[in-house]
Amino acid sequence: MRSSNPVFSRRGFSRDNGHAGFNAAPTAGGPAVGTNPYATNPYAPQQGAQLGGPQAPTRPDVMTIDDVVTRTGMTLGTVVLTAVLSWVLLPVDPANLSKSFGIAIGAFLVAMVLSLVQAFKRKASPALILSYAAFEGVFLGVISSVTSTYVADGVVIQAVMGTMAVFAGVLFAYKMRWIRVTQRFYGFVMAAAMGFMLLMVANMLFSVFGGGDGLGFRSGGLGILFGVIGIILGACFLALDFKQVEDGVAYGAPREESWLAAFGLTVTLVWIYMEMLRLFTILSGND
Image (cartoon, rainbow, N blue to C red; front, side):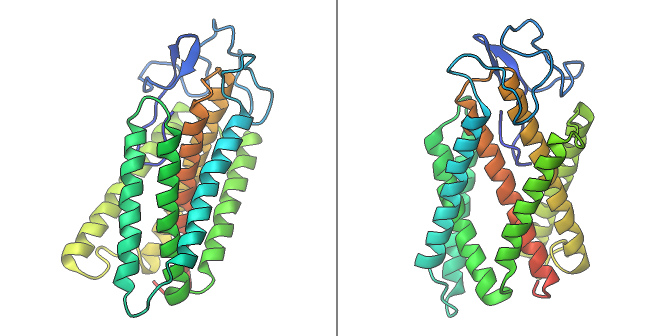
């Protein structure tokens, strides 16, 4: 099971010594998302267990909802802790904002490298995941401090509350089965995310080489539109994360997969927070 961030691919299920693994990508003609490919597996239920509902595993080495909640709490806690510390210990110097942005970009690049290393590993590495969370927290802390102090006061709280609202709303809708993760849903979300990422990269390149805001996808009316689209995509990836957690519990995935579930949820929540921060900044009139 890999991160839900659009930069990373996802893995499907495969048998691995009696456990449900996440090593084989879904293939055409294979089991549809939401079906049980292990009808003969004594550890897998005939129907997927609902998120937070009855859990199939009876052995001590399989993933449970409690494992996912604990690991996610540790990962998100690391992000929040380092974000707060970087905000307090790395005050923004108005006469040298380039230093703050340099720290933020450096932390972001390190976090990206660590996340890519984890994304291509076959097994979860708690040290890699927590290190990613620490550097991601430094990036978020510095960017949030600069935004709140010199761009738009109050947007950080708005972005945090908005991110929490999206998470709670998607979780509620998923548990109520208002959102159904099917093969078609998966394909649509991945295609939309790929298109979104390509447009953002194009906008960044035009901004770097042409100056200004590039193609204008991150400011003004277009910025608001693409901010909303980014948040909707983040919500869709949350639904895919919840589906992976549900399937991992239902099919008896190894306990270590709970770290990958935490990693995926953290990356998605960081994505949503950044889109929220930019959206509220634009709405405040300071884009």
